[in-house]
Image 1 (cartoon, rainbow, N blue to C red):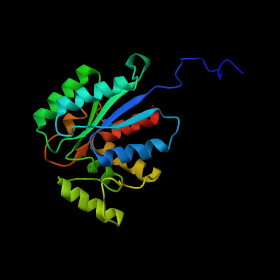
Image 2 (image 1 turned 180 degrees about the vertical axis):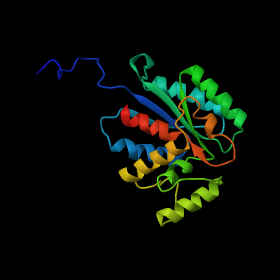
Image 3 (image 1 turned 90 degrees about the horizontal axis):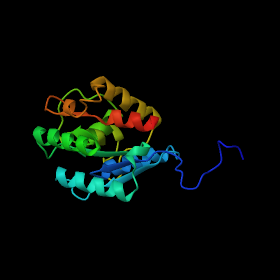
Image 4 (image 1 turned 30 degrees about the vertical axis):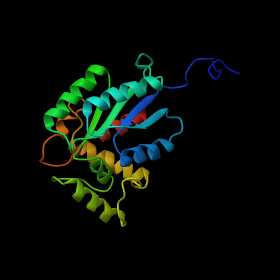
Amino acid sequence: MSPQTRRYPGRRQSRLMFILVDGKSEKRYFEDFVKTNPRLRIVIWPSRDQCSYPKALKYCLSQASNHSVKPIEGDRTVIVTDVDLHSDGDVRTFDENCEKAGVELFVSNPSFEVWLLLHYREITRWMSCEELNDELTRVLGRKYVKSEGIPYDKDRLDNALRNGFRQFDDYRRRNELCLGKDRCRTSLHLLVKEIQEF
């Protein structure tokens, strides 16, 4: 066995990414996405409290610790959430608190379905959660159900990334750029691109 392929006790094979999600559609999507690349060490964990940002951060940190996330070894802790139930000020404060805690936040305004719809087309206007769900029903050709998500397709994923990067590519201001009611936006293209390169 060569030195490069020898396994050492206690040495981890790759970095770990822990992602706390706040809904069924997010959990389903990321689980399906991770299945396409078995080498990825990604834990998708559902949040207990979808309404309280402070509780979500506390819960995320405790679960990341339980899963042995080690930032010093390059591991990452991420929260994926919607902003539909929160004010812009709440989101900004949550983003600041996450950054202080070493957690990366990625938001969709108003909901995760913005990211799903970007797999099919650009979004150039504001749409409510109901309109997003209706449009997903239309493009899927069947009733959109959160727990079923959308079928994974590499070409559609590439389309979603293109559509996301057409909106913006500023990683540092990613969540700030999602706020407001001018049109639906998400920062998830930045996270998915990073997962592909993780």
